[in-house]
Image (cartoon, rainbow, N blue to C red; front, side, top):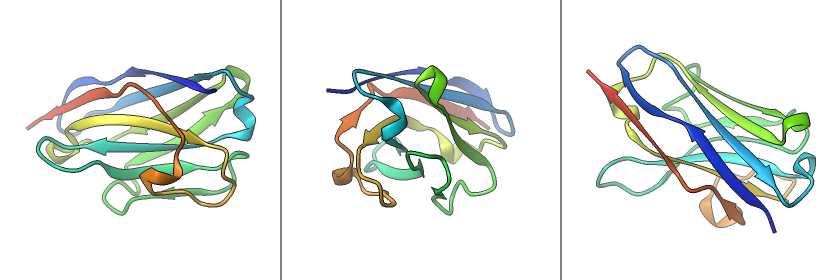
Length: 124
């Protein structure tokens, strides 16, 4: 079983930056792919970014491409989502997720483990 604990998030002005962290325990982190999803107010959860087990396959949603950066630090069993040039439309509850699947994974049903969620609010 894998446990994911998220940290980071908060309130930031438009154009600012935030970094989210996702710490894993209970399974070798280096074998897991990690994804980030978000759920804007009143909307369904959507894909943001994913990084595979060895870090050489990264994929972003078009809406965050060139502004967000997903990364992983296996020595700390932690994945990150660096969010720059934030916009009000980035306001959402952000979730990290993990899976042992080795192919590109961008759909919710492909992820087995989920973090608790962390709020990101971007003011205009």
